[in-house]
Image (cartoon, rainbow, N blue to C red; front, side, top):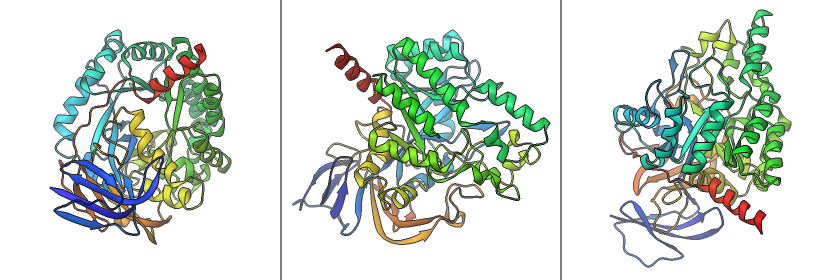
Length: 473
């Protein structure tokens, strides 16, 4: 089947022009002005922006916290309805089992039958024995191009110490696997949490007090040093603070291959949201914690300078009433995380593009193109071009609405951005050529999504090699 999308304003990471996109089957076969082509269906996109489907490189559909589990891929229609057509899921290794075996057992039993967006995977180290680090060399053969380690969460299976970080960085460097790290000093957080609870300071706001920016900064600096010892690239996930961004900037200025992302909530929300009455603050308990307005401004500034290269969501769908309330008397028992994948495009367009903080080209770069490159998915995702998957979003910039959980698809009982204004809307979404959102309504089916293997030696390695060659000139 052929579909011709005509007269839309096509936006890529480097260009913007009025033109047409011709789709045949699952692929884009032509892009240009006034294409002379026959098609089974012609869609007039005049007045709308034609964007590549978003790539959210940081989501959690299988995360567990103290016995509670998030909503799974049965809610991945929320991503698609929000213009994100590819998500990359973190899968925590099961004790005594290989990382890839853990991933593909879950894929077969849970993900493949239910996924409504395309997806890829990050492996997460939870059993830091030599066998685990030896497995990293084989991950690319299974289509896994990244591995994540948590420096936070002392006492939990997914916490990693410096030895594990060093071994992972060393093994990953040889295999072309990108190491992604959650940077917070677990020991200091543990001490602060115990002190605050002993003092009777148990409200959600004290989550932020127990995780100040310096615990994130210290861990970031530490893993940058470990990566430098190994001469390996490293990717810092969900950067929240100006000081942490500056640490990444300083490393880049030294020629070190250090990269980072932030998430939508860290651009929009503040630590004062944790102090909302009637336990409402629990909705905003996430790690690292929310910061200040000054930190938000610094993160926005980082995009145009290349100090951070992606905006993700860290989507994590815990219910407020039935799950987050388990911490009603002790903030340390509140499951960490918040939903957000459905609102990423709308929030960034409204508060980024329309306020002049980022251009439309930069938006596409941060929303789709560079996340695909980071994950080794840019052979088919993140760009409108010939040969790419026909993941296409038609965004209507006209009109406005108010974000409400009443019409959200993420499956939990609250919206992180409840009451926020959204300018424009997602009108249509194509997933590999199939229309899955029409006039803003999701019309796809469970199982529409498929696994997309990531390729090794992705963007972080390309940039690292370029820096090394320049240094040797």
